[in-house]
Every structure is written in C-alpha cells, then in structure tokens.
Image (cartoon, rainbow, N blue to C red; front, side, top):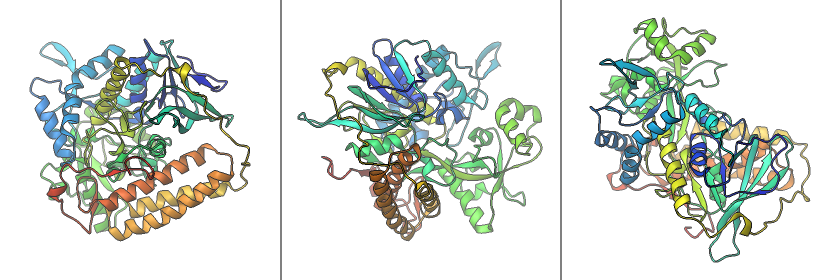
Length: 543
C-alpha cells in the first residue's frame, strides 16, 4: 500500500475508491489481487466513522438463532420500507463476512463454552437474539486496524491520505454518460488534480455533520451522496436520519457515543428522580429500536425541560462493566464519570444516514461505472430505521458484492482508453479574504437542521428550513464560483445540498414512520408500505 507524502499527481487506475473505511478498504482488498486500485482518504487512512463503531457487527452465529429471525428483526426495525431481498442477501452473507474478518486477524471477544472457546455475542436494540460479534467495546477500531494492516501488504493498493474528492468526472461524449474519474484536492497543497479510472466506488460514509449535535467524526459531510447527485444519480430515503439515543452529555466530550451494547447488557434509562421511563413507550423498554428510544428521550427532555437523561449500568458489578466496556469506562473517567458507581448523563445525537445513493444488489448506481457502498448508499437494508450493528455488516457484504461484480464483468473501458478531461481551471477565481462567510454559513446550516429537521418535525418547521437552505445554497454557489476552493468550502457545498435533499424528502412523506416523525401526520400510512422516497436531480433522465 503506497501512502504518498508528495501528493497525488494525475494518474490512471483500474478502480478509484473514494473513502477508506470498512466499505472502501473491503472493496479494495477484494479487488487488489487483479486490479490496480487507488484509495482516497480525507484524513489519515484509519480516521473515519468505522473506527468509532463501538458495538459490533451482527450475524447469525449461534445455533439458537436463525437467518429468518435476523431478517424478521431487520424488517421490523425498518418499519415497512426495507427491501426484503436486500435484507436476505445481507443476512445470509453475515457468517462468511465474520469468518473473513477472523481471517484478517480481527480480535473478536471470545468466551469459554463447554470447554471450548467461541465468539462472545451480545444483544442490542431490535435484536431478538444475541448475534452481535464484538471486540470489547471498540469493534470498529479493531476492524479498521485489521483492514489497514492487510492493505499495507498489497502492492496493487495505493492510498492517498489527506486528499478530498471535489467532484466526479463524467464523460458525456458517448451514447451513454459514464464516470471516468474524479477531481481530487490535496489537503496540504490545495492543488486539484485529475484522477482517471473506468470504475469509481463511493465509500464516503454518511452525512450526520449536517446536524449541530452528532456522534460522527468531522469528515461525515455527505460528500459521496452530493457528488453522485451532481453527476445525475437518484438519492433515496434521505428523510430517515438516525439519532443515536445515548451520547455522553459533556461540553468537552464532542458527543462521545455510549454504545447500545450498554443497554443490551442491562443498562437502564432514568429520569433525574430515578424513574425508568422507557416501558411507557415500548414493551421492549431499553431494547426497543433506536428511533423509539431516541424519540422517548426527546419527549421526556422536552416535557420536563431537561438537558439530558441518565443511562445507568452501575447495578452490574464493577468487574463486569470494566470487562465489557473498557474503552467507554476509561473515556468516561476522563470526563469525570465512573459508570461502575453512577449513572451517565446522555442525550440523542445525529448518528447514521439510512438513505443514500440508490444502488442495486451489486452496489451499482444509475451512472455506468459508478458504485456506492456503505453508509453513502441506499441498498434497501435499513428501510425507515437501521437496526443496531447492521451497518458494518452492510459495508462488508456490499463491498464484496461490488468487487465481485467488477471482477466478473470486465469493462471494455480501460484506464488507457479513457478520454483526457479538462484540467481543473482556477484561472478565473481568487483567494478569498472572506472566510467568515464559510464558517458562518456552516454554523447556521447545522443549527437550523437541528432546530427544524430533528427528531420530531412539523411541516411549518420543514418549510422554514427549506426557504433558508435555498438562500444558503445560493450564497455557497456564488462563493464557490468566485474563490479558490478549500476543504471547508468543499464540505459546506456538499452539506448544504444534503440538507436540501433531506428537507425535500421529509416534505414528500406525509406520514410518521421509523425515524421520520412529523406531528402533522403522526400515524403510519399503510398505503406507503414499501414506498421509498426517491428524488432525482434536475436534468437527469429520471427527473
């Protein structure tokens, strides 16, 4: 694996992968034996949402569990909007995905059972059985490190760190438009270079940074979804933004996530007076799906004027807590909380993008040559609400499926025969002396999304948000047209587009379902079962 410090010069590859998390690196590893692959990473190669996934990865690994049960649980959490075949495909591939990770050396937590060692499985919200394999409470970090270490030994994989994709390059000279690469900015030199490839895979993650409070790293700005939209691809179900119910409430914590596994292992949600309130909202109490738990917490906070509620697992032994949640325990101690002896203050925060670029079973988008995998994509697995620990599974399964499809369907287009697109033109722009515009618009966008397009919505709030976002889009477009681009401007341009798509999608859905709860239409409409919200960009063949 070749990480470059000199920057990425204009090059041609067999496959260009934008994103270096679980989805991107899994695709790269399956392709690398026979394809020359470039992986673009916004920051350090191991810095992305995958690294911060604490809970685990779901798969049917116990004799008392079944594929049918995992499918049923996923469909139930998805509230009538999952694609059943996508769910079955993903669930069926789960055990093989775990075995592949074990082969890479992922140190999943194990336990002794009848004189033998086996994977320790935990249970999380929405699951009817213990089926979540984990590496203590730092599963994402363990998976990401194993993927990076394996990729380092692959001569056909070149990783370019601290590079940011600006836009896809689409060749429109033929009978059918197709992707042929991307413009990429070196984060240090700010130079924009042309990278060509007949196949491009978007593995850029989600868009939770569009909200003021979120659990995601700074790079989760919806880049792949925005680039695909501008290239003419449909985007589906973007109104379904998942809010994780339990992020640590502390001014310096930056929305540190308290894993759902804490509730899975017996943690109680409490009001300040010690009342366990979840049973008033769902018979499954703390093990209800995330949308129900987050909405219940939001309801109680607003009803009582609270800044937070509490999550308490101190009734378990200190040894149990430290063994099962070593990283969470240590981080909480750094912020002054000992979860072995006291409850933790928690609040919901934006966490996962259930919608994304519409793809088929192989991760193919509407644009020939362009694939999308992981959180940037919409496969139909999550429907109106993602069940806990299905996201890492989706990354692995669809990255493998995309790689297999690419390898089994060799394209007549090769890197050598791709046309030479125009170089990035900065001849008519200048350096900005008004960076405050970017920072101000960034802050305003994220706050209005939190206030108007959050856990509980109204049509009036959505319309108010839509009007203001349109003004912000005009401001950002004008700024983008006149000044040299910076990483902050690239991300703001993407985020304001994502915000517009989220609000338009929410206005399209005249019902409450899963993660989308709107007071004007508080009930689920059975006639909309199986009907995702599909938006097409203006001027595309689908509009």
